[in-house]
Image 1 (cartoon, protein in one colour):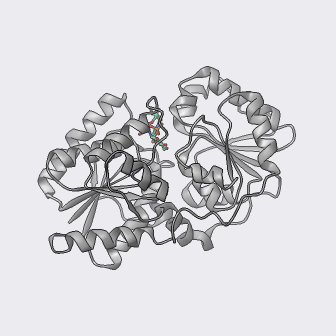
Image 2 (cartoon, helix red, strand yellow):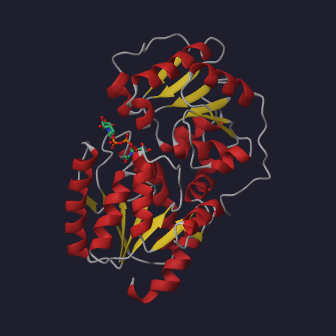
Image 3 (tube, protein in one colour):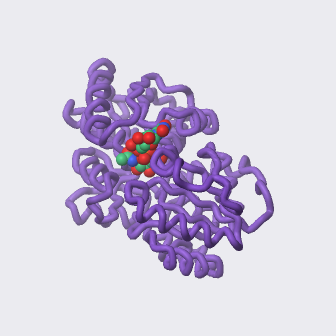
Length: 350
Ligand code: UD1
């Protein structure tokens, strides 16, 4: 039996193609949800949209400091692993749930497969970077979304396997279900939730100033992450003309919002890629990215959090055209490639 360990919104999306491939081959698996994300809009809604069956294990850990949240996850995951003795655990991405899943498994000598291995921003101040590095170094299998990720792992003495990106599989699967535009204005879609922007009032205010300026010419749709709401919900003007603040969207609504936007402005790793897959230009509100391929394709630009830089980057991207010949994220069958490797190496034990 395989145990998937997930907990945060992007992981439900990444779980989908792998679990589909396992189901198709009749390989048994169970899902452990740490409860890192627990609001309906952050968790249940995505399970519904993706048609995922409810997780067999829900730890309901919730929010806390990094140490407390990770410690509680380690304790809960260890218990489930001892009960279930899975042949393999699969962890996804770079959240605290990924770290806890990989660490708890490795300490109990359970092989770990890391999906989305090998990404690096080279910024150790990002909690996600610490999670990625530790997870890659304790995992058994490293499934890489890009060749660049394989090359980065090789520099750390780790063998990565290029499979393509599971988020591309998911978009491909749901492409026919993406709804038409909510309105036909040249709106800009923005999301802000990364610690580097939400833990710094200066950075957030500087981004907010840019949004206000942009909203004079292009309406802005801003699905607000609970983290950002908790930090700045009381301070920002929810009725600012031209800025529509909405609840976090489900998977399919989000794909529709991305596809029909004139441009996306985000600090999310997943949305940078989804914009690329859906051929919408992106301005990244960060100083680094784990997805340099999207920049090479002129589909993305790093703007940081400085108001004037954001405005000039947006201007540039609104007039740029991406190079559609650059397709580094695989053949839309990453889930199948991952399960091929697992089945070939572990078949009889699963
Ligand atoms: C986490 C990941 C981040 C990922 C993001 C996707 C880590 C370190 N970060 O960030 O890499 O991009 O998920 O969304 O794992 N909250 C709620 N309801 C929820 C979840 C969170 O209100 O369902 C609020 C709480 O105030 C909480 C804050 O959001 O304290 C932060 O949540 P947390 O789980 O620490 O990380 P995210 O910011 O969501």
